[in-house]
Image (tube, rainbow, N blue to C red; front, side, top):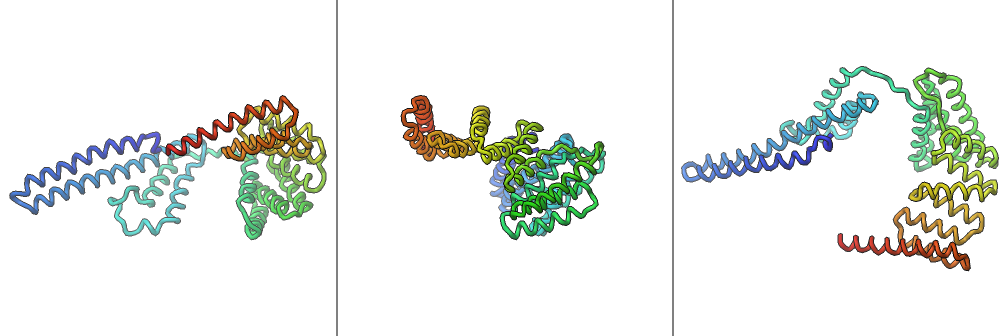
Length: 366
């Protein structure tokens, strides 16, 4: 909202007007000083106060305008507009103590309670059209919670949360709960139990969430997780099948490609993995994950020079130029009499060294 309405530029323009008001107060005060010193002080102080009040008033108006624009964007994007007042309610809960004791006219922002009331009034005027949620939304939400757990105690807390969700009346929540329990069990090495939870989540998605449900049934997460579990249980053929199913459903899915590569490497199909990853690095050369996996594949295939070359490209995508240059030097040494590989490495080495020098020059300037 602030960007769309150019509030920063308008604020700078407003400051010029306020400076004139303050300056006018000083001039009038100076003129009145000879006859009435008290009036002079009042004029100077009043001019400065008016300038400050104008700036504060403008800031509050800008915040209200930004809230309105944000609400309109939320509505136009198909999101639940009740999220706007809910956001300010969370803000009030977190920082409510800081809102007390300061009058509204002395604030740069409107009172949070006023913003909540404004958003609630706007939300009441909007007809609620429920947008179908993708099944993937609930599954990715569960995986995101797992990724953020960070500790054994965190996993324990999440297990309790997912157990609670699995017992709720909503099929969507049940599915999210069982899928989350599968991920927790997977992290804890209880793969058979994880498989059982995953099957329960699949059953809910297939049998309960029928066509016409507010949840769309397409999902890659089930196949990706099934592939991970099959690999962990020593069934790489099964893992590859699940991964390929996911890749067919969405050829651009990073997760599906990662699962496919992991299964192929476990099966010893290194050439297939290398060919897939080389295609990915060509199409998406700035994606670190493809170079990292390619380095693994070359390592398994005993191609040391190419392994270090892939690691160099990986470090380059991360901006770690010294490490990238070092890996290229190792790759050049390992390439031996391979003229083609040596030429490629030499060319990339010059590019990396030039890039590193340019970066150092920029750092010195700053």
